[in-house]
Length: 158
Image 1: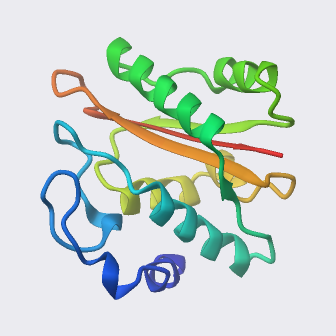
Image 2 (image 1 turned 180 degrees about the horizontal axis):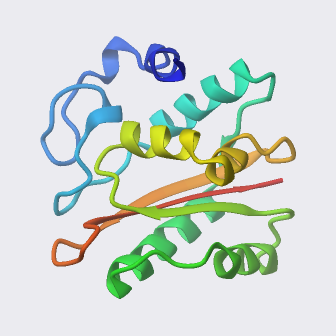
């Protein structure tokens, strides 16, 4: 199973309190809370371990992709539903990010849940394992009154 390998990427120093006051590794911090913020570095490290196990290089966090992921999750949360990946990929390409790909989803409450769901979905897994990708951005947004509560965007590009 890949999740235990991904958990190995978490250091003992990560066992701190998250933005919501949750204790433990950031992989399990609840995103279904006001003010919750994903630990983008932990997400990068988990995805890097997964990619390395598949013979692929790690991705670097990119500030532009990060901002776009944050904007996209806020829009999804405001709309109360996931967006179409084609729209955000077009925006990313216009911003100068070559060969963008995106995982847009909703309903996962932790990074561990989102990673497992993406890994088990062929189309989402392909984004995490995109061999041309070198950069990434990841974000969540919380909408307590919506059906899904938590909205996710993982953007990758060359």
